[in-house]
Length: 396
Image 1 (cartoon, helix red, strand yellow):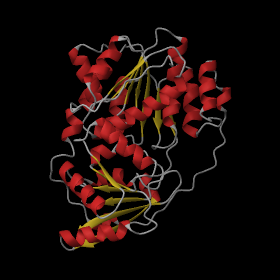
Image 2: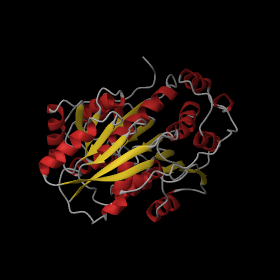
Image 3: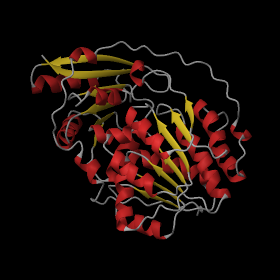
């Protein structure tokens, strides 16, 4: 067994109440002019980037070099090439990058190097969603395998028993979502005053989801002498304020090129009534070019109902929402990634942790609550240099 341990995920009903409640209740959103749902993709041409390093150049422990080599890591991405040396030098880092740029390894390599080489090092990694926390845990586990430290994953939708067991083992790497981390802090099962490395991934999404009070509470509890990594796709005033308060002379690395929506062809689908709406969705999904799709609906109940209807019509479909256990959500996501499922019906919050590069279409079966939510939704298509498609249903 590897010396890197990680939590066993259970399908318990108890979860993060913030995530379970969001997306389950209908709420009134802002009016969005349908004209804003129509646009032609204008993909920005990625400029050739010549890295200054190879992964073999980084001054890290042989264990990490061996694991990176096993993963096939040879040439770092821009965010990795610029962030890893700063992290290894002990600098605070602000990384401005879209999802899918390799930012997990950009912070995981220096964090794991510290854990292996300094027995006093303890790291906390905070992510906005369960799915993203698990993706980070997978990456850290593969890079840190054999490193001689233990870890714990603290997320909603899983049983507390395994998390309490892992915390009793005094893990030096803790990965989790804000609500569940705070829950353990208030229970007295997690004390952060000795944690001297922290990573906040997708800070903008975390604050969009209403986690600013929880994140501030967590950061205040950490060791004052710490190294911090903040990663965000945008630098809204709230993000800037948080970083300014909780960082120490940070170095900024920006590799973001354009908006994610620039890579997406956007259009509307007009319908007249419930039956017409369902038939139009059916006609879209049977098209050959519609290969892998996320369909957004408003509530947990409507997502489940729509998924069942699509399955009854012969589509390889599944549903993901906050009412499902973490095990159910992970199985649905794994099936979607492996293309065993063609259509994933989701609520906004449940989809926030989905990072799948080959999604061809995003379909807004119900309109988003805000234009910002719309941009988040459609940004799941058109990744890794591809051009994606977004369709939004609008009444006649």
